[in-house]
Length: 236
Length: 232
Image: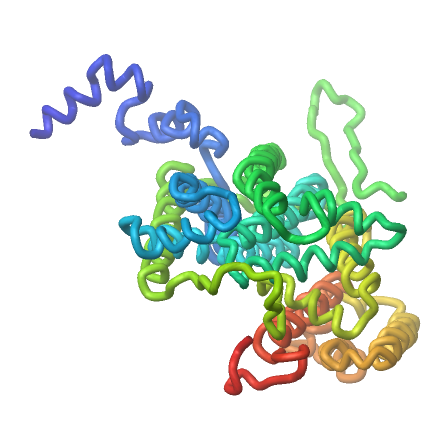
């Protein structure tokens, strides 16, 4: 049995995918990192201090983990959802009562979204209290603040999509806040967001596009830059 | 701006190619003493990441099995709920709107908060992070009292007791090391907190208090309700 595994790991097919052997020596452990597309953002060695859980609480990584959970559950939810009035609401009802595990899917997405707002905020606090915004990481802190704003916007645009009372009035309250920007700018922002003067079908479509495409793509780009800069500035 | 460090070289650089850096003050993280014991990223970090992610997914799944996401009746513009609440992370803002005019509570204060967060790393005082009471104790004391006085007066004018309370409590903690000098223990620790620490902690306290009030203590007409009377 063991030799079978060894033959598999030594085979040409396996080696064409993973160019290193089993991570049994420090050399192959390093190769496991830098020959791997997903892991090569990490250095091959890290400071023992910075992988201590009580130093970072893993909050940055968990924010990204929540983003992955939200992307997967969100893509599945998109299969059962049409952003139109009143169909959006009946699709919610179908998720509850017709689709297998539909309610579970929605629950996962909802709770992960709430958790992400909290975890990203806590990540910001951790970075602040450990002084990790100091040079040369000043600009990465700025990107991080923008990512916090994006997280809130992602959560907020998703809040309208179920098209229930909670959604409708939550968004009405928020866009009324935007109206308070003086010199008519607020009215324009609100009109642009809603595609009209009240929360209606145009608003639903706009929030849907923002929530499922524009904001996730923008946030993904910023996350890429954020992680890359963490690494370039000597972090994990 | 004074330089943070000097670099000196011996005269015969060919023979003794050693550079010595004298670090004059606590500055950037990159000139910190190299205390680093290194470990291999695989498995030390990668395994931790995988475990953390899996624990998180399990917790989310359990939570999703126990508690259902809310779904109320279909959106109806004719029927305004009382109170109409935004999602929880905006309830601090909504609470501010209750006290201040919309331009102040809905636009100026949140914009200032985001801007203040962004500029943190661009001020030397936030980089050095020296204890608030390290030097210029008298001037610091006077400035602090005047600043807190003005802020509290403005807040009292608008009857924002929810912000006055955390402000005064924080000020109490800030002033304790000024009056009671200790070498060890909690008060000494407080004395070593830098200004940025105090401001951020105050900000977090205000955010938490306002959000908690907006979420748990506000009912019809945005009036005060206790959580056991129902959460709206």
